[in-house]
Length: 262
Image 1 (tube, rainbow, N blue to C red):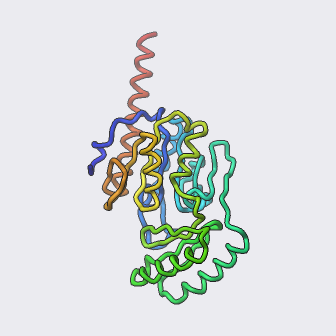
Image 2: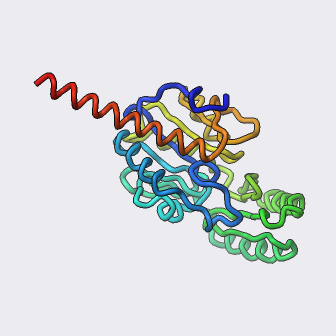
């Protein structure tokens, strides 16, 4: 399925919304710090959150602080670093952390190793490390081999491939676990979950939402367990704006009906 028309009707107030960011709400850029979310989409997300009584969370590989900056003025529930850090609807933070000695050793080792590959760099996320090779795609196999060597020596870590990036993160962390945690809490509990994402890192989230009989939407090409599909970020934006416009029109109709009944 390739068009938003194939996605089933959605009751905004009864839905628990989960959005990936890069490649979903925002286009992919050469470097992560160049990514932006259009102002009208941020406004639309705020409206979706209001309609759902706050049951909207960003679920991303980025740290939560970056998510807050990207999505401002929206600031609500969020799962960063694939769920290693999670902020619930009350604002409480939940963390899965690497030991300080391990994190320091990995940072030193990876920064030294990455210097051998032009155009590649290490992004430290506190509880995870991302090895970026978008500006050095010829080094993909070498970067994957480096990451695989690290997780072989440190079994508490797992390798998470993505688009021109491979991440090293705690083994107990993924987006599916983050969504499952949200769905046990207010205001998400009891709602139909919807998760939209574009990358291999989102497949665990899709599996979890499918198990909860929710709605899963894959953005862009590639095999996926997601049940629905949108072609690209532009189509995601149009779909979101259409949802918000339908909600606005429905609210106007409801107010008119109430007024006519008085």
